[in-house]
Image 1: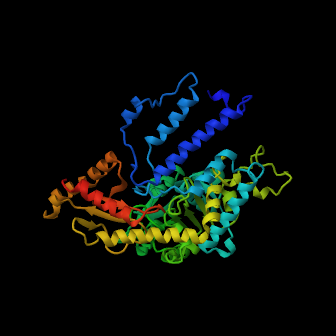
Image 2: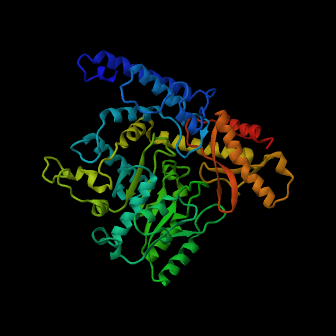
Image 3: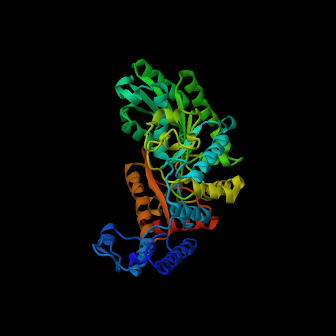
Length: 496
């Protein structure tokens, strides 16, 4: 029983025994994760898991259960989940299982502290400051000056950028609310992450005031369209406030032309945010960082090390060029947490800059990985993933049964394609073919999940029917895994 564990009197022996067994479960799971003969997932429908399978019961109990049962529950939880570190898991922008990062996560949970003050998290607060400064240097801001923090994911980082922009231009909104501001509009790509629209809704702008910008065939914002829409908004008496440029869009992996967008933002005095949640990691690569040219002109940047750089979830940074504005926007000076008369330099109490109070320590695993790999190690990882996506693109661009969603080499590791089963190959383009093709990717994906062999995402985009979106961010993936994926799509899709 759990009451036999520490801090119980004589609890040391059972505690060590229990923790060693937990570590055994975890190390077995890690071994299996990298073993290509194991499944990516053992799929069950929600009703099956809820009804309880093979003694795995999700219902909570009134009476304590034995430690043996708790260990079984740990095993089962991993058994029926998804191995996101498996070399053949390509479903999300975040994937892989970094062993140093995992060690960092274990230590973080053991230390179990909160990021809001230096008082309670001295080492972690300093690590965060130093790491954020290094990231700002990589963006290209002079001496890495500025501000920032780690937030619970890219959507929240993007929301911070909208809040700070509003505070910069209309600081009285902080006290008086949106009635103190004119009708403000935000601009973002039609291919951008939905979090910009969500921030518009959550912060009281309204989604009608989030204006979507047209993109070229590769999914990049057309600067002339931005300028036209700014002028149109001004003519209607609205006030343009904020432009989001995406560096690595979710589906196409497109990089908006930041320099040209920055010219327009300077001309009309708008806040420029770069959402590099997915593409920010390319700043680590000398070969690929040119795709973010102009990022140093941004007022704020979102960068998620938990995506391209393989840091365990969650690890997302909002970086701001102007020092002090984060605190100005968010601080409430709560006397019971941020006492001004502490014995140390209270500028290290970062909690008042955040919209949260309690903030998880997301920095340690990232700091530890950076120590272990060096900047050079992240660069190698990023270059390798981009090489792999190039390999996939070259393999299928002229292969029978495949059609690319857009022409040309992908800018990021996103490779978007249709698999055309033999039954549709001779069919003329038209509504009937489109309807049939729309059903192909979901069917193949369902069979993949049932058999547990691999996972890759699909979606429609605009007027395009469902297609596969392949992404590579897992350092353990190899060319043979790409070959396997293509063989698997053909095996499962051949008779559709």
